[in-house]
Image (cartoon, rainbow, N blue to C red; front, side, top):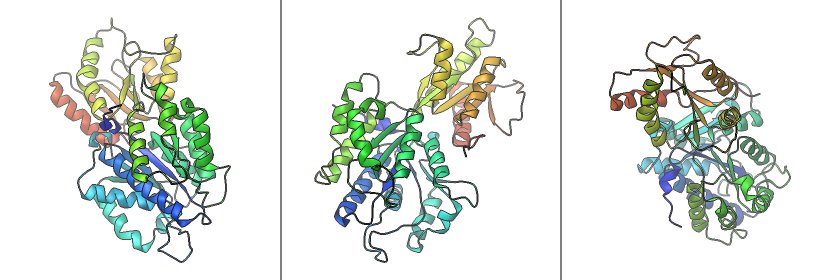
Length: 393
């Protein structure tokens, strides 16, 4: 089946996991090669990454030539090469492609031999660092923040951390793709980590994969194709199959909150802004729009559809032109849900709260669409990855 791999544009994929120090170095080395191939495929085909960073423990303590039992630095190393070679396919309108979430303590634990790489990535303009509360190193807080940025979770090995991340993604109706490699976990914890999740995914593919419409029947076959047979399958081939699967997944969704009453005197103006400005910018950033009353819905009742779609959206675009009460309710819901929010309104609209807290793009009806799109893109880039007003934990 031929797929357009550019459909990865605008999606950040989180790669998470670890290996036990008792696992054979050949198996760990296979996992590192697989991660390298996956990262290169994701970045060159338009996707982004969500990672962690910090220390780099090795399989044989004190032997830096043995493979690390964590995979983040391998991913960052490949990312730096792709950036250097100018092969990043990410649409910059979607924000920064690589997000690293870490604690203050983790940053202090970056190995000296990785400092040059870290500096190179920081200076590239392609990596955003998100830090949890100063002084805290709670892994659960890091994972919660990572899940806010990631659209898809890919796991290898690991224990409790991987299992917690999977639950966070499931709770957001996001895709989880676990590999079956027998790697164990660096902390020797959990109930089977990625290996157990891989078995479950074969039994419940619909729970793990969010496929595009019409492709749901391919879930089982695509997951089966990712079987590594304990590292017997070529890592390049497995990575290629994963990238193909990623392109078959539903894109992140942007839920529109806006004036929908066609009898209102500002409806035509708002409609022109969304069709001529918002739609093309949203599409270019890799999102699929959800607009009640316009797009297909699986819900019988519009109120149920609104809050179900908003609850699981990756982004809410909230236009407050005409100051409709239902729009404020949905805005408040999105902010409380820690969904990314882009707020807009027609120039001259009076917003009844401080826009320093939630910046608002005031669009001008008199401008041509090309100019309005450029103004909206600039605002989008500045605000798409703002931290949420409500932080979990």
